[in-house]
Image 1 (tube, helix red, strand yellow):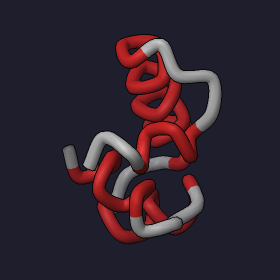
Image 2 (cartoon, helix red, strand yellow):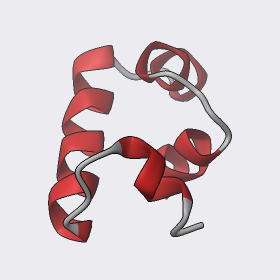
Image 3 (cartoon, one colour):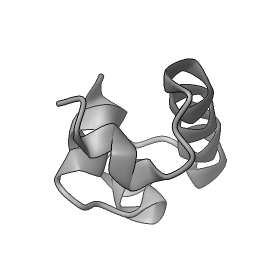
Length: 50
């Protein structure tokens, strides 16, 4: 949920990683999973879910 909220705020994966104290690769995986679960093709579509 934190990743989704930060995406909606326009944060990059690198920004999210720094803010949540995780690796960028972890954020990449979370974003990829969110896109797959929602059937979205773009991260901007995830913002509409918030």
